Image (cartoon, rainbow, N blue to C red):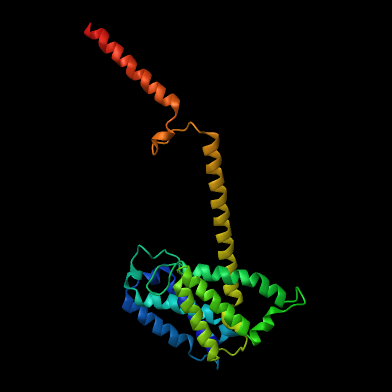
Length: 257
């Protein structure tokens, strides 16, 4: 049941991310959504389209399912999504009342960093298997709560709500798996998270190097004129202005004489 639902979310998210679909009026988007849900879950030779998709890719994590649900809901509740001005915006980082463009990449980058250690170690890179912690997830739940508290302090409150939904889903065992890692992360979210993490590292390194370059330029060129501060006007500029004004006075004096 959960696998078919996540497969439906994947197709709906892809369809509603297409620019022609995003330009449709709100009512037509609702009609298209209902028609897709009915057609995707209609049995074809004892198995629906979503069943085939689930058999190929498996179940997504509850985190991914919640993100996709918020994305679809934002397309179906925001009437401004149909304008041509935002039809080319990114499907994951778009601004809407239900999904914050800052929060999803931040959460994905954090999970991507975890995946860089989790999946290689779970596949046998080391003798230690952290995937087993998901079967008795008291430590993972405490770590998730601590992370939620930290993002609330940093101003990423929607991330805390999303992780709360994951914890509630785990408490009700809505997935077939009993491992908490399967509720928190999946390979597709891990790939997206690693890309977000690398982009954030690149942006941080670019900022560091640009800051150092600007400081080096300031130290190597102290006579550059900066109009924001009178103290930074070079002495040679001041002396030139003084000589010019003095020469103008001499010329005016000679004309008067």
